[in-house]
Image 1 (cartoon, rainbow, N blue to C red):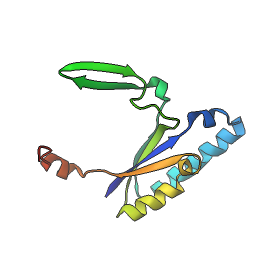
Image 2: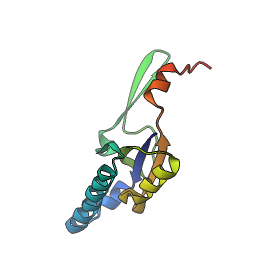
Image 3: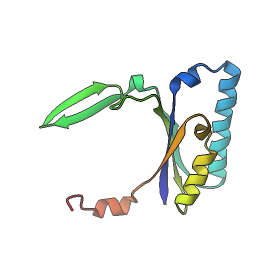
Length: 125
């Protein structure tokens, strides 16, 4: 089953790091990437740019509205994600706990609908 691990952190905390601390933090993510790949559970993952580059789109009564930035204001922002393929939620939670982001922010774990079931799903029910 696939799960998305969404990494939330306060971007101001990362901005305060010294260059050697940034290098050490990134090294933790490189090691985590390698561990996911070695375990053959890695599907995808990327670091996201700041919410200052984000736009939120909403369509109301046929009219499109675009808002600069994220929809919700919060101290933490989504900074990156991984998609992993593991047997169950317990395995996903174990991988989330190993993510460097869990040590300086939080990691939300959410199951992904399998593609074949999404196509058959009737959302009107």
